Image (cartoon, rainbow, N blue to C red):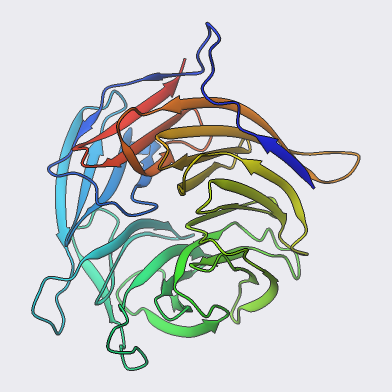
Length: 349
């Protein structure tokens, strides 16, 4: 296992990223981890951004230079209850044959066509198992093959089978691996290998569960926590990247749970991780106002994952709550912050 320290912001004369035109929002982002989703549409020269704000989610479409072209607001379906339910996450799920926008809340799970125009599915959460003082919610969203997986307050993962078109979505399986609320889910294409780990789930205790997806999902490995939550996870070429509440990023071998690298990445809790899969860049963002970019690679000799710090960006006086790459090559990224009524954009120089 290798320990790495963050080098902080780069002081060299050559900066890797520069600030671009921000995208205005109608309200600030809620103080939630992973509070930014990005969907790039190269064929239409557009990028969609999704941000949660209380009982609503804001969707913004922007041109490459950051000019906002359209905005839409989605609200959580109310279900049974007096007050409007709070939304916990919004996320685009890219399936082999369609793209759905998934919205989770304290009442249920809503699935929309990618532009948010039509709701195609609603799943109400069953609070029967919850104690009177326990908050009921869904959180953690990812697509794997033709399935969409969503985490819940109980630790269970709901697996929905998505048809090629239409609203005939079915809850096909419930996965039991966690005892505390799920925080995040990450997947990567299985590439046809048997027994390959292609999904990882995280929870409030810091426990990671590694799965093989398919008609029946199989739990392959449990990676124990160490007393702090794991708000965000990513999966890259069989390596699990996990960001923790103490500011650490840890890289594990997905199949075995072996710890490869431990990075003292941030001074405060990590709120978001993202990957640029084409180039192996990892983005980490935290409550210490910093966004760091790391380069991941595999050592030919040991087979272990190695890490190089590429860039550090300070977002002054901002409680960062979401950060994402805006393209698969990692040449641009966006950041949201609590009480910040705009999406900050950065692109490579």
